[in-house]
Length: 350
Image 1 (cartoon, rainbow, N blue to C red):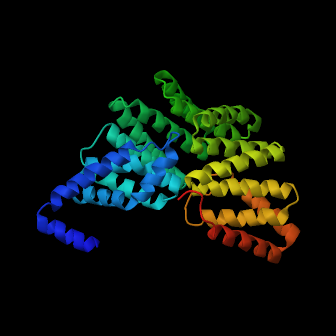
Image 2: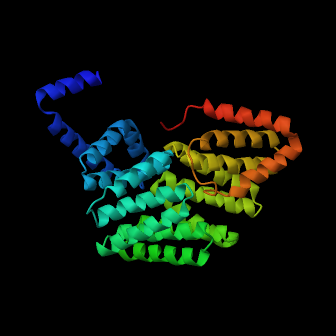
């Protein structure tokens, strides 16, 4: 059917005009998608349905060497690739667009650079993420693009955090926070607070991290932002687990699980299941803990997220203790049960 339609279009003499209209339509769609607010599930569902058209639009822009259109498309779609776990595709397309950018500059380039930095960070390529975010910061400042400037500081902050430079991380995140407060960018203020909490958590200041996450969770619940609820709850789950409040940790991990499942955020859905596995182990439910590890492994298998995107020690601790309780054979059976069950599950979000 597609071949027939393409032939008829070519015969009509309107093929080029139609491709141009197609490109403009999907460029507008990519840039209009609000993937940070309460309408995120609706937008993700729409982008899911239009994914092949969006890919085609990027291909057309690249073939025409329309560098600005290509940068605008990848800059609008990078959060979608991140949430849905299409990290390899997202990085490849953003990097290719950046290589072909010619004279593009300013906020369009800053947005694409930030997107590429975010995807590199999500895969654990922190050196590349820092380089891209630094370039984005320079472009944003030159064009007075404050939103992209705040995001670049945020990315530089979380990159420094993963490299264990916690002082630098705090400086960058506080700059992002200050820019957000200065211009009333509430979402950027909340994001900076969340990441300041993560810095506290990862640097061993667990109690100090909790108020950050609680403030963010209240805001995200009030505004109905599933991804934001998921991140705040996931981090609260980790903090309360490390503080020994396993019942509270279960509640937070379960809220994170539901939030991430609602938008199809596979990587962090897997991390929420790892957190629930740790809680089940502490309550003596060893086989259920292992099944949850198996479910998490099935989700994480093809995403390609960084190994330290969530507490890298937690799943290893659960596995080591569960193996000592059950033995390798019984552990393997329970793990495979969970892996198969997740592979056969119809996702809540499609």
